[in-house]
Image 1 (cartoon, rainbow, N blue to C red):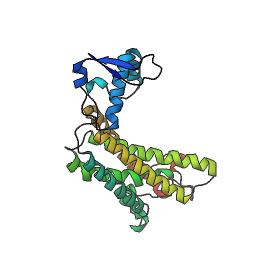
Image 2 (spheres, helix red, strand yellow):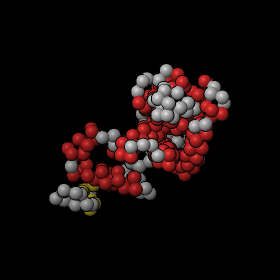
Image 3 (spheres, rainbow, N blue to C red):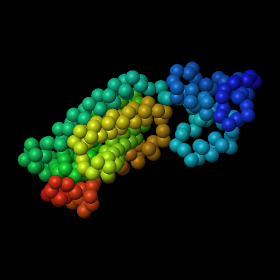
Image 4 (cartoon, helix red, strand yellow):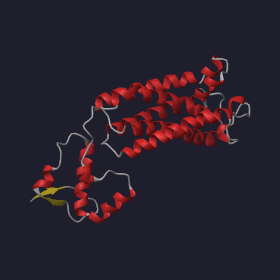
Length: 249
């Protein structure tokens, strides 16, 4: 047994006793993430009941299952996700105009913004993100973890952030501002891709996450296609310029 000193908030002690086997369980520390996990492990030694409760109410990984990130090529994954940012932003920007450029083709309309409503602009992030997911599937499938879950989570975050920011700032400004709308799109894509990177570099999670992700992607794709022609009569689907809905707007 030996003693490790560490600052533990709200604790009367600043040291924890560890045996040699527990010490050897720690990997060589190379990331702040590992430091965080070691800190939490030591905290668990002092406050086992409190940390057990935190495990129940949070999505934090089980500390006993291992520390740090999986052995993936993080630099390679990061490069792919950075390229993906540019790909999604550029293709998404193009999809804003393709419906008009191709003579308002219904097929093109499934993948493009057919009017100026908020919902249609979510296509500009979703479809390019889905396409890029297919592009990087082969090179990253074996070199990264949680692929489908990571890419689905990133895409979902993009299409959630855009309307949240839009309705938040327009509630204050009273109108939409083009520069803010463009900036929101770009920032949402960047944040979504960074989330993907974190999950791709994270330790391998249950395969159920990937299975659920496939179902969610299919449902979203069907929703974007269906609501192009049969949108619900809700504000998010209403073209602010014409007052119409869907491809008729």
